[in-house]
Structures are given as C-alpha cells and as structure tokens.
Length: 474
Figure 1 (cartoon, rainbow, N blue to C red):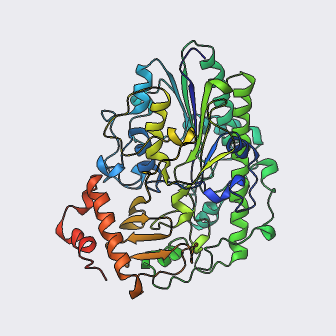
Figure 2: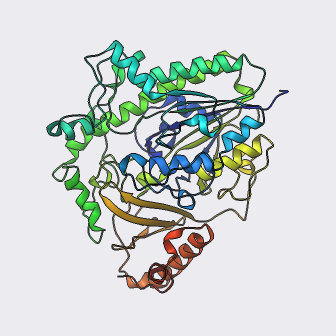
C-alpha cells in the first residue's frame, strides 16, 4: 500500500453494548457487525464520556470533553447552549490538510447552523435529502419521529411502529446505498479518503421495515437485568420519568413489544452496514481501509422501567460497542478488556494510525498499543462520564467507575453507589451503607481530581467542591 490508509467510520445512535450479537448477552442478530468483531478487535469495556447526542458527537470531532467548550446538551432541546463552533479544532480538518477526501453521510446533530463542511468534510449527504426522497416517493407515508404528531398519539409513536415502505427505500438502506455510491466515487481518486456514516437508528422511535419488522417475537424477548427496578434510595427524577413518558404502569409484556422493535431495527441497521462492507470488499479495499464501528451512547428501552437515556448513568446507556478492523494490520478475533473512551480515544488513535501529530490538548489516549496486542501497565483503571440534563429540567451528574464499583455524584439529589460485582444491574444503591464510608470518600476525592484536571467548570465554586472534598452531601 503506497498511500495512507482509508478510514471508514460507522456510527450508530443509541446502540446498547449488550445488544450486539457478538456480546452474547441478549438474542439480537447482527451477523455483519459480528463479522467485523471477529476480524478485528472488540473492546469489552468501551464507555461514552457523555450519553447524549450533540455533546457526544462534538467531543468526537474535537477530541475534548464537551464541558471544555460549553456544549452541555442537545441544541434542539433549548437555546441556552454553546455548540462546537467551526473555529474550534477538528481532526477531520487535519486529515483534509494531509490530502484526504472527507465525506460525511447521515445524522449530524453537532451545530444547528453549520454542517460538516465547516469542520473539514468536503462531501455531505444530509438526512434532509432522505426526507425529500421519501416525501416525493411516498407522500402518504411520512416518517414519524415522535415529535411532529398529534398529542394523543405521542406515546405510541415514540415507542415505534412498523414502517410499511419497502426495505430498500427505508432510511437505513437509503443511507447504505448513498454510502456505497460515495465509496465508489472516492475510490476512483488517487488520494486516500475518510468516510463517516452516521445512522439515526436504532434511536427511538423504533420503526422497522420489511422482513425485520417481524423478526423477533415479544414472547421470546428476555427481560433486561435491570427491569426489576423499585427506585428505593434512587434520585427522584428516575421514577418521575415513568410519569413523563406515561409508562408508570407498564409490565414486561408491554415493554417486550417495544424491545422486539428495538431488536428489529438493530438487525436492520446491521443489514445496511453489511451492504456497505460488501461494497468495500467488492472494490478490493479491505486491506487499505481502517473500519471503525461504535455508538454515541446506549438506550434504556425499558431497563430500570425507563425510556431513552436521560438523567441516569446506568451501564445500559454509558457502555457502548467499539470495534476496529484493519485487515492484515490488526489481529483478528482479539478483544481488549481495558477501560476506553470511544469518543475521546478514537481521535488520537486515528491520528497515530495515519502517522499524524496528536495534539497535546486531546483528553483521550491512543488505542494503537492494544491494536498491536501490547499490555500497558499504566493504562487507566477508572472511567468518568458526565451529564447535564435539560429534557425534563436541569440535572447535572458525574459518574466515576472502577472495575468493581460505580459512584454517581448527583449534586441536587441523592448520590448513587453500586457494587458491580454483587449487583451488576445497579438495582441496590449502597450510598447509605456505612461500611462503604471510606470508599465513598476516596471515590469523591478522586472524581474531583479528574474533573479539576480535565477542566470541568462545574466544580469551580466552593459549594460544589465541598460535596466532593469534604463529603458534605446527604
């Protein structure tokens, strides 16, 4: 290979780690993603640094936690938000300087005024193009998004419905077709390319098409491990969400119908990804291309009896799938059990793989040693994730996780402490168990240290510091 490798970056939205077949945790069929994992490296402990779309995607573009540049929540959930501006650093722009042809297809959700072309991509295929395509071809079948609908239908629409249009004209397969066309177009050029494909799925509402609509029977869907939630010693906002979504009386038989559609959409996305990978193989570009697959965050989808991903730091929403494949360069069928940040560690990883300089302000670390099968004794032993609320009111959170414990700092509510070895589904909050007093004090101080080092502005006052440094917390 004489030129730099190509980079094919596939991002899905709201994909649980345990709902990829390769994880062997829940019965979801994802043969194409599984094949990626079998021929690449599967990260068993990959975490999002923030489980919310806009700040997560902005962190990926910039290489820093979103708190450092002010993007705290989704820009379409309110005007009091500072999006990542084009003047900020963007690693795709650096690839462009190196001669890469950059293309972005699918969901953007980073800035309400500026599209990917302002951040280093020269080609952009927006999902607005799909909306126009669909409205023209199927004017009687508008795709519901849970928002532009009658209020009395809102709940049902958010849960999803069967989309009756042909699979080949669904949003997933329209996008895979556009991605394949872009692959063919850019592969005809001499310069290397970076193509990023962002699926909106399997984000709710779950609207499967064709053969995928009936792929899973609700009767055969096992309950989530976290479904037995009773909200004892839990922040009030968690149970309140049941009423916000009007699911307070749902039993598992109600949720199973919804989860069956979630499974179905995941399998549908997997099929669409398979078409893209088939194009890569047909063009004989596998050995010349680094393939990355991940998600911005997970999904509750009935776990802890809740919907979506807001106001919680459960594994359901913070743990994500992450796969890297490079035929002939990355040893296939390998796994890594170390803690990694998918959104923060990928920028330095990509730059190192391309022999580019890694900025010293990046807040992640390159994963290249793991791709080579190396063991790093000084690798991180903890993960920190953040959340700021907004959808149902402001509610800031910080998660500190080790391999055995998880501590969640909720400045305006009860904190959470989970013994993950005894309670892997985070049902029992140990925050008031006095035998963990010293451990809790240690976790709070360590969390403060990390937040201070990484420039989190929320600890820049004595009241907030006092909660962590002096355990002045109910």
